[in-house]
Structure formats: structure tokens, C-alpha cells
Length: 113
Image 1: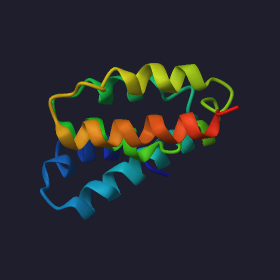
Image 2: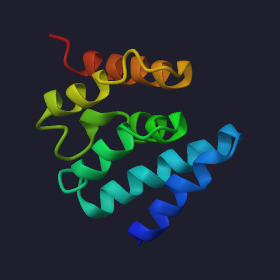
Image 3: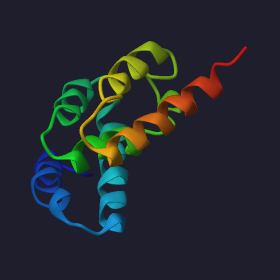
């Protein structure tokens, strides 16, 4: 089980690594934490990470939870996903903005009529 202490270490230390592969592991670990904890129970942590000053941390959320609406809670509450993702549409980091665009596109494809 991925503990909260490990998640904090990953947020504060692993996120500083320049290697994109390491950042992919961070995103996957974040999703695993949310899966184990429960996505709805993880909302405070998700929101905290989305507001973090490090773009790698913000991207770990947008990328790690893709496709957001395939995840429990967000599947039944897609507006909760889009509301959170959309806050980063004009992020200062291009890296984050690209991830946000892909995540929103994923959701829109899933909910086309």
C-alpha cells in the first residue's frame, strides 16, 4: 500500500527530477494512491496537488488520473473532473497545459452524443 508519507516524499522530492520517465512514475503513483484511498476521499489531496507550485506535481494529477472519467467517482461525476482540470487551462507551464488539453479532450470524446 502506498502510504501518505511516501506520497509526500514523492511530491516533495521525486517531482524535482528532470527525467520525464521519473515524472511518469510520479503520475502513476499518484493514481495508485487515489485508487487505494478512494477517488472521492482523495479529493482534498487532488486539489492540494493541483495548486502546488511545482508544475511536475500539477501534471502528475492531470496525467495520472487520465482518463479521469474512467475512474470511480469521476465516472459518475464528470463535472467534478472537468472543474478541477479546467483550473489549469492557462497554467504557466506548457507541460501542464498540454496534459490538461489531452485530459479534457479524453473526457469530451467519452461524452460525445
